[in-house]
Image (cartoon, rainbow, N blue to C red):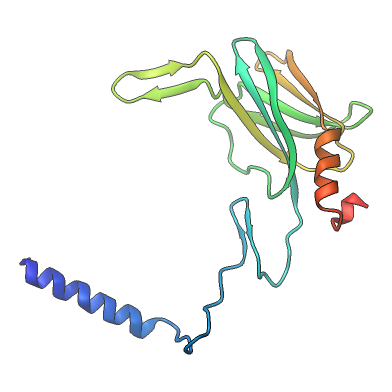
Length: 171
């Protein structure tokens, strides 16, 4: 295809796009997209999806884990299966009953181009679990079932409710 033909083709596509696009009167702004896009909520939706998740992050090293952050956010839990079951994170109620559980792969394992598989000394493991207002703590197990970390979720719930007092589960 000659360079001139390529430019003519682009002009044709531009003209078609303008002709097929919905018209917007002068001065009017097009309506922005609305609703959930991944974990981001864009305003203007006709309904509000109030699903929430615990987002818990740990810095994992060989045989240990340290809490980086625990929070509550609007969004959905992960529906994708992990690449492997190196860790399991649970949300427990005050009596130790498991309310939610999610498997996770070891984030230290990486693939380096032209070098192959490598294991980093430490990395951050972040997991989204279904929110339950009765959630009191998070517990991280390694692949053998050994508990490597346990964290209090009460501060995360309190902060979320302080910032979202309109939420029905915060009343």
